[in-house]
Image 1 (cartoon, rainbow, N blue to C red):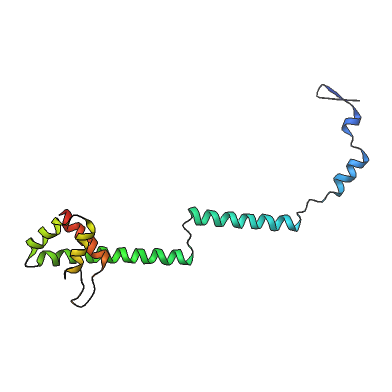
Image 2 (cartoon, helix red, strand yellow):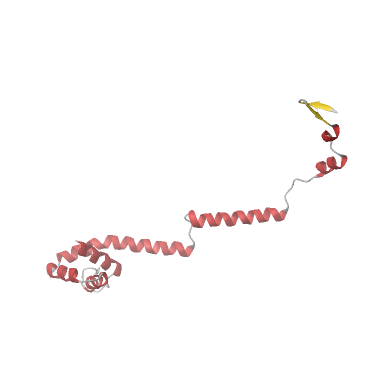
Length: 142
């Protein structure tokens, strides 16, 4: 028997059996290949989920779609002031503005501006629907 910190401990509690010592000495602390591969795959899937959901990662199709939308928005925002100036410079501005404001729906106002020469880059060109829509909205709201 031994006295340890005021507690009586039996020697059998302190000493490990021969069988326990052998197990501790021969136990391997290595990882199995299957566990390592599983952990790597799980980490890769986790990184992909986090990247696409919150990391602003995009697929090729998603990036192309975003670029097209951004370009269309930029063109619309840059050409709309020219449409408005062209509409205001027209000799029948007051009549056209009254006609535009008399249209009940946004679709009809957009169609009116689209049919006129104001949203067209040239006489022969076709008017952009998004430019006509933004132009009509700004003219309608004043």
